Image (cartoon, rainbow, N blue to C red; front, side):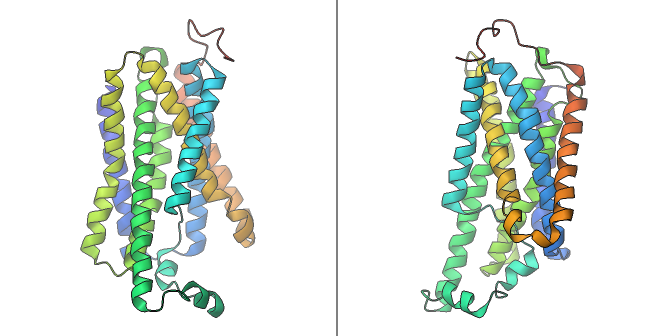
Length: 298
Protein backbone atom coordinates (compact mmCIF):
# COMPACT_ATOMS: atom_id res chain seq x y z
CA UNK A 1 0.00 0.00 0.00
CA UNK A 2 1.40 3.45 -0.92
CA UNK A 3 2.62 5.45 2.11
CA UNK A 4 0.27 8.34 1.28
CA UNK A 5 -2.76 6.03 1.31
CA UNK A 6 -1.71 4.44 4.58
CA UNK A 7 -1.12 7.87 6.10
CA UNK A 8 -4.63 8.93 5.06
CA UNK A 9 -6.20 5.82 6.61
CA UNK A 10 -4.29 6.23 9.88
CA UNK A 11 -5.14 9.94 10.02
CA UNK A 12 -8.86 9.29 9.56
CA UNK A 13 -8.85 6.63 12.28
CA UNK A 14 -7.06 8.99 14.67
CA UNK A 15 -9.59 11.74 13.90
CA UNK A 16 -12.40 9.33 14.80
CA UNK A 17 -10.61 8.32 18.01
CA UNK A 18 -10.15 11.96 18.97
CA UNK A 19 -13.78 12.81 18.26
CA UNK A 20 -14.85 9.82 20.35
CA UNK A 21 -12.82 11.15 23.25
CA UNK A 22 -14.84 14.34 23.18
CA UNK A 23 -18.15 12.50 22.93
CA UNK A 24 -17.60 9.76 25.53
CA UNK A 25 -18.03 11.98 28.63
CA UNK A 26 -21.47 13.00 27.36
CA UNK A 27 -22.77 9.43 27.47
CA UNK A 28 -20.48 7.34 29.70
CA UNK A 29 -19.52 7.91 33.33
CA UNK A 30 -15.78 7.41 33.84
CA UNK A 31 -14.40 7.05 37.35
CA UNK A 32 -11.05 8.41 38.45
CA UNK A 33 -9.63 4.90 38.99
CA UNK A 34 -10.63 3.68 35.52
CA UNK A 35 -9.19 6.77 33.91
CA UNK A 36 -5.84 6.35 35.66
CA UNK A 37 -5.55 2.66 34.76
CA UNK A 38 -6.30 3.43 31.11
CA UNK A 39 -3.85 6.34 31.09
CA UNK A 40 -1.11 4.17 32.62
CA UNK A 41 -1.58 1.55 29.92
CA UNK A 42 -1.54 4.14 27.13
CA UNK A 43 1.52 5.82 28.66
CA UNK A 44 3.24 2.44 28.63
CA UNK A 45 2.46 2.07 24.93
CA UNK A 46 3.83 5.54 24.17
CA UNK A 47 6.95 4.96 26.26
CA UNK A 48 7.57 1.68 24.47
CA UNK A 49 6.95 3.18 21.03
CA UNK A 50 9.35 6.04 21.73
CA UNK A 51 12.19 3.86 23.02
CA UNK A 52 11.71 0.61 21.10
CA UNK A 53 10.39 1.92 17.81
CA UNK A 54 11.04 5.57 16.95
CA UNK A 55 14.50 5.77 18.53
CA UNK A 56 16.02 2.73 16.73
CA UNK A 57 14.62 3.87 13.38
CA UNK A 58 16.05 7.36 13.91
CA UNK A 59 19.48 5.99 14.83
CA UNK A 60 19.42 3.71 11.79
CA UNK A 61 18.59 6.53 9.40
CA UNK A 62 20.94 9.14 10.88
CA UNK A 63 23.86 6.77 11.46
CA UNK A 64 24.99 8.89 14.41
CA UNK A 65 24.18 8.36 18.07
CA UNK A 66 25.20 11.92 18.90
CA UNK A 67 22.79 13.41 16.37
CA UNK A 68 20.04 11.01 17.38
CA UNK A 69 20.14 11.69 21.13
CA UNK A 70 20.54 15.41 20.44
CA UNK A 71 17.24 15.48 18.56
CA UNK A 72 15.60 13.28 21.18
CA UNK A 73 16.57 15.87 23.78
CA UNK A 74 15.25 18.70 21.59
CA UNK A 75 11.94 16.90 21.21
CA UNK A 76 11.66 16.17 24.92
CA UNK A 77 12.44 19.75 25.93
CA UNK A 78 10.11 21.20 23.30
CA UNK A 79 7.20 19.18 24.67
CA UNK A 80 8.26 20.00 28.23
CA UNK A 81 8.09 23.74 27.60
CA UNK A 82 4.79 23.41 25.74
CA UNK A 83 3.39 21.68 28.82
CA UNK A 84 4.97 24.14 31.23
CA UNK A 85 3.63 27.27 29.54
CA UNK A 86 0.24 25.96 28.45
CA UNK A 87 -0.37 23.61 31.41
CA UNK A 88 -2.57 21.38 29.31
CA UNK A 89 -1.44 17.82 29.95
CA UNK A 90 -3.80 16.91 32.77
CA UNK A 91 -6.27 14.06 32.48
CA UNK A 92 -9.07 13.72 34.99
CA UNK A 93 -12.42 11.98 35.14
CA UNK A 94 -15.01 14.38 33.67
CA UNK A 95 -17.46 14.04 36.55
CA UNK A 96 -14.78 15.05 39.01
CA UNK A 97 -13.51 17.83 36.79
CA UNK A 98 -16.93 19.35 36.43
CA UNK A 99 -17.59 19.37 40.14
CA UNK A 100 -14.22 21.01 40.84
CA UNK A 101 -15.33 21.70 44.41
CA UNK A 102 -14.32 18.49 46.15
CA UNK A 103 -11.15 20.07 47.55
CA UNK A 104 -10.72 21.03 51.19
CA UNK A 105 -12.45 24.27 52.10
CA UNK A 106 -9.24 26.14 52.77
CA UNK A 107 -7.75 24.99 49.47
CA UNK A 108 -10.87 26.13 47.64
CA UNK A 109 -10.72 29.47 49.42
CA UNK A 110 -7.08 29.93 48.49
CA UNK A 111 -7.78 29.12 44.86
CA UNK A 112 -10.41 31.85 44.63
CA UNK A 113 -9.00 34.34 47.09
CA UNK A 114 -7.86 36.68 44.35
CA UNK A 115 -10.78 36.37 41.92
CA UNK A 116 -13.30 38.42 43.84
CA UNK A 117 -16.30 37.13 41.90
CA UNK A 118 -17.84 34.35 39.85
CA UNK A 119 -16.79 36.31 36.78
CA UNK A 120 -13.17 35.82 37.79
CA UNK A 121 -13.78 32.10 38.24
CA UNK A 122 -15.41 31.82 34.81
CA UNK A 123 -12.58 33.84 33.24
CA UNK A 124 -10.05 31.43 34.76
CA UNK A 125 -11.89 28.51 33.16
CA UNK A 126 -11.85 30.30 29.78
CA UNK A 127 -8.11 30.81 30.04
CA UNK A 128 -7.71 27.19 31.15
CA UNK A 129 -9.45 25.62 28.16
CA UNK A 130 -7.88 28.08 25.73
CA UNK A 131 -4.41 27.20 26.98
CA UNK A 132 -5.30 23.52 26.86
CA UNK A 133 -6.56 23.74 23.28
CA UNK A 134 -3.50 25.71 22.13
CA UNK A 135 -1.04 23.39 23.83
CA UNK A 136 -2.79 20.25 22.64
CA UNK A 137 -2.94 21.61 19.09
CA UNK A 138 0.86 22.01 19.10
CA UNK A 139 1.16 18.58 20.68
CA UNK A 140 -1.05 17.08 17.95
CA UNK A 141 0.92 18.73 15.15
CA UNK A 142 4.04 17.04 16.53
CA UNK A 143 2.18 13.73 16.70
CA UNK A 144 1.23 14.18 13.05
CA UNK A 145 4.89 14.65 12.20
CA UNK A 146 5.74 11.47 14.12
CA UNK A 147 3.11 9.50 12.24
CA UNK A 148 4.17 10.76 8.82
CA UNK A 149 7.88 10.27 9.55
CA UNK A 150 7.28 6.73 10.79
CA UNK A 151 5.38 5.79 7.65
CA UNK A 152 7.91 7.59 5.43
CA UNK A 153 10.90 5.71 6.83
CA UNK A 154 9.27 2.30 7.01
CA UNK A 155 7.67 2.60 3.60
CA UNK A 156 11.04 3.04 1.92
CA UNK A 157 12.83 0.22 0.13
CA UNK A 158 15.36 -0.27 2.93
CA UNK A 159 12.71 -0.45 5.65
CA UNK A 160 9.99 -2.62 4.11
CA UNK A 161 7.97 -3.83 7.09
CA UNK A 162 4.98 -6.06 7.66
CA UNK A 163 3.03 -3.54 9.74
CA UNK A 164 4.04 -0.11 8.52
CA UNK A 165 3.94 2.52 11.25
CA UNK A 166 1.37 0.65 13.31
CA UNK A 167 3.19 1.18 16.60
CA UNK A 168 3.29 4.95 16.18
CA UNK A 169 -0.32 4.97 15.02
CA UNK A 170 -1.41 2.93 18.03
CA UNK A 171 0.36 5.17 20.53
CA UNK A 172 -1.24 8.31 19.06
CA UNK A 173 -4.71 6.84 18.51
CA UNK A 174 -4.92 5.56 22.09
CA UNK A 175 -3.78 8.85 23.60
CA UNK A 176 -5.86 11.32 21.57
CA UNK A 177 -9.22 10.51 23.24
CA UNK A 178 -7.83 11.53 26.64
CA UNK A 179 -6.58 14.84 25.24
CA UNK A 180 -9.94 15.57 23.60
CA UNK A 181 -11.67 14.64 26.85
CA UNK A 182 -9.50 17.13 28.75
CA UNK A 183 -10.49 19.99 26.44
CA UNK A 184 -14.17 19.09 26.57
CA UNK A 185 -14.12 18.85 30.35
CA UNK A 186 -12.50 22.26 30.75
CA UNK A 187 -14.95 23.83 28.31
CA UNK A 188 -17.87 22.27 30.18
CA UNK A 189 -16.52 23.69 33.44
CA UNK A 190 -16.40 27.09 31.75
CA UNK A 191 -20.08 26.89 30.78
CA UNK A 192 -19.63 26.43 27.03
CA UNK A 193 -22.53 24.89 25.08
CA UNK A 194 -22.22 21.42 23.59
CA UNK A 195 -22.17 22.72 20.02
CA UNK A 196 -19.15 24.87 20.80
CA UNK A 197 -17.39 21.92 22.41
CA UNK A 198 -18.10 19.78 19.34
CA UNK A 199 -16.64 22.43 17.02
CA UNK A 200 -13.46 22.77 19.10
CA UNK A 201 -13.19 18.98 19.34
CA UNK A 202 -13.43 18.67 15.55
CA UNK A 203 -10.79 21.35 14.97
CA UNK A 204 -8.51 19.67 17.50
CA UNK A 205 -9.00 16.26 15.85
CA UNK A 206 -7.88 17.71 12.51
CA UNK A 207 -4.50 18.81 13.90
CA UNK A 208 -3.00 15.34 13.50
CA UNK A 209 -3.76 15.09 9.75
CA UNK A 210 -2.55 18.68 9.33
CA UNK A 211 0.80 17.91 10.98
CA UNK A 212 1.14 14.71 8.95
CA UNK A 213 0.29 16.53 5.71
CA UNK A 214 2.75 19.36 6.37
CA UNK A 215 5.56 16.87 6.96
CA UNK A 216 4.59 14.56 4.10
CA UNK A 217 4.52 17.45 1.61
CA UNK A 218 7.41 19.41 3.10
CA UNK A 219 9.89 16.53 3.18
CA UNK A 220 9.58 16.21 -0.61
CA UNK A 221 10.98 19.70 -1.03
CA UNK A 222 14.40 18.80 0.39
CA UNK A 223 17.17 16.82 -1.22
CA UNK A 224 18.26 14.70 1.76
CA UNK A 225 14.85 13.42 2.81
CA UNK A 226 16.37 10.57 4.83
CA UNK A 227 18.23 12.97 7.10
CA UNK A 228 15.08 15.00 7.73
CA UNK A 229 12.99 11.91 8.43
CA UNK A 230 15.63 10.60 10.84
CA UNK A 231 15.72 13.86 12.77
CA UNK A 232 11.92 13.96 12.83
CA UNK A 233 11.79 10.43 14.24
CA UNK A 234 14.33 11.27 16.96
CA UNK A 235 12.43 14.48 17.79
CA UNK A 236 9.19 12.48 17.97
CA UNK A 237 10.80 9.92 20.25
CA UNK A 238 11.61 12.76 22.65
CA UNK A 239 8.03 14.06 22.57
CA UNK A 240 6.67 10.55 23.22
CA UNK A 241 9.00 10.18 26.19
CA UNK A 242 7.88 13.50 27.67
CA UNK A 243 4.18 12.77 27.16
CA UNK A 244 4.36 9.30 28.68
CA UNK A 245 6.46 10.35 31.67
CA UNK A 246 4.22 13.35 32.39
CA UNK A 247 1.36 10.87 32.74
CA UNK A 248 3.33 8.32 34.76
CA UNK A 249 5.42 10.34 37.22
CA UNK A 250 2.48 11.92 39.12
CA UNK A 251 1.35 8.39 39.99
CA UNK A 252 4.36 7.98 42.27
CA UNK A 253 3.02 10.63 44.63
CA UNK A 254 -0.74 10.70 44.20
CA UNK A 255 -1.85 7.14 43.43
CA UNK A 256 -0.14 4.90 45.97
CA UNK A 257 -3.43 3.16 46.79
CA UNK A 258 -3.71 1.83 43.21
CA UNK A 259 -0.01 1.23 42.56
CA UNK A 260 -0.42 -2.50 41.78
CA UNK A 261 -3.15 -1.94 39.19
CA UNK A 262 -1.35 1.03 37.67
CA UNK A 263 1.96 -0.86 37.50
CA UNK A 264 0.32 -3.82 35.78
CA UNK A 265 -1.39 -1.50 33.30
CA UNK A 266 1.94 0.22 32.56
CA UNK A 267 3.68 -3.12 31.96
CA UNK A 268 0.86 -4.29 29.68
CA UNK A 269 1.29 -1.14 27.60
CA UNK A 270 5.04 -1.68 27.36
CA UNK A 271 4.57 -5.33 26.39
CA UNK A 272 2.09 -4.31 23.69
CA UNK A 273 4.56 -1.79 22.23
CA UNK A 274 7.37 -4.34 22.41
CA UNK A 275 5.27 -7.01 20.71
CA UNK A 276 4.25 -4.68 17.89
CA UNK A 277 7.86 -3.63 17.33
CA UNK A 278 8.95 -7.28 17.18
CA UNK A 279 6.27 -8.19 14.64
CA UNK A 280 6.84 -5.02 12.62
CA UNK A 281 10.61 -5.49 12.59
CA UNK A 282 10.39 -9.12 11.46
CA UNK A 283 10.61 -8.00 7.85
CA UNK A 284 13.80 -5.99 8.21
CA UNK A 285 16.83 -5.48 10.40
CA UNK A 286 18.58 -2.42 11.70
CA UNK A 287 21.99 -2.97 10.23
CA UNK A 288 23.99 0.17 9.67
CA UNK A 289 23.24 1.54 6.18
CA UNK A 290 26.04 2.02 3.65
CA UNK A 291 28.17 5.05 4.26
CA UNK A 292 27.23 5.29 7.95
CA UNK A 293 29.72 2.85 9.44
CA UNK A 294 32.13 5.44 10.82
CA UNK A 295 29.71 8.04 12.15
CA UNK A 296 28.40 6.53 15.35
CA UNK A 297 30.01 9.32 17.38
CA UNK A 298 30.56 12.56 15.56
